[in-house]
Image (tube, rainbow, N blue to C red; front, top):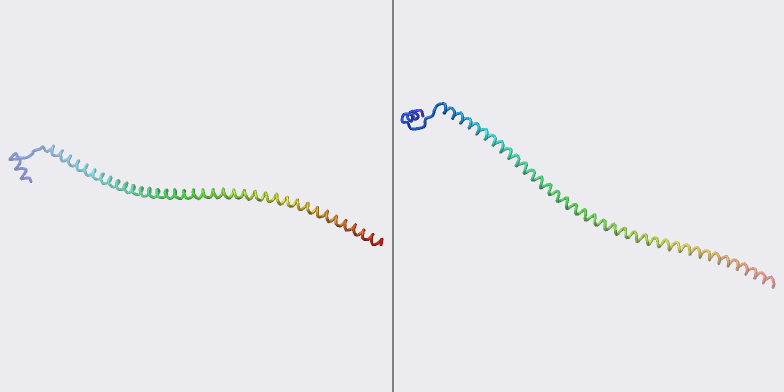
Length: 152
């Protein structure tokens, strides 16, 4: 290499720079290499962060899908529950209606029963009066028969 440099200097074939400029360019070259190395390290670190964020993104996407599926299931369950509630409300209305009908029927039966009891009491009184009348008549007949026997 040195021979080629000497030959180029003698033949004046090549580039010639001063020692200061060479040292300055070498320092700049070293500085650029250090900067490149630092940028490569930063790039590697950034790439690791990108990979980390990409993994986090994928995890969040999976979590989002799980939540969407869970939400979908909840909506289906809510719809089923609402349908069941609606059916129960309809059944409740029917039962309340039937209960009111039965209460009305029971009320009518109680009124009829009370009327029958009153009528039975009246008939008992009439029967008691008839029995008393029969007893009185029987006593009178007994006396008439006794008087008739005594007269003969």
